[in-house]
Length: 137
Image 1 (cartoon, rainbow, N blue to C red):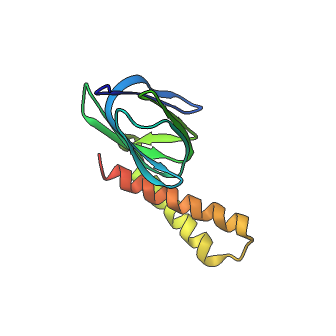
Image 2: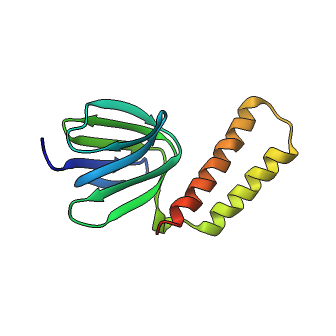
């Protein structure tokens, strides 16, 4: 068993990490939070909006937000493919608070079908997670 995992995180806009050695990776999967350590069993999963973190062997831990996506773990290699991703230091807290207020107002003031309701629930969830991540700078 290795003492590190190899982590890559990509989005349609950028490659945040490519083959970085890490001690631990924490993701918010569809079944809840998952921590991946060296020697983890192979798996593929979906990501939900939530915090992610990793601790690189060469440096400090990093935290951020992933909106949704997929991940794969195989042979101590973790690949994260996210729709959107922001590191804690990149988050505009005032923008996240404004998004929270808009989503809450829409959810309070409107009557709409289930799909539209779910869309605004997700917007609210993302804004809250972004604020939470920003507080971890």
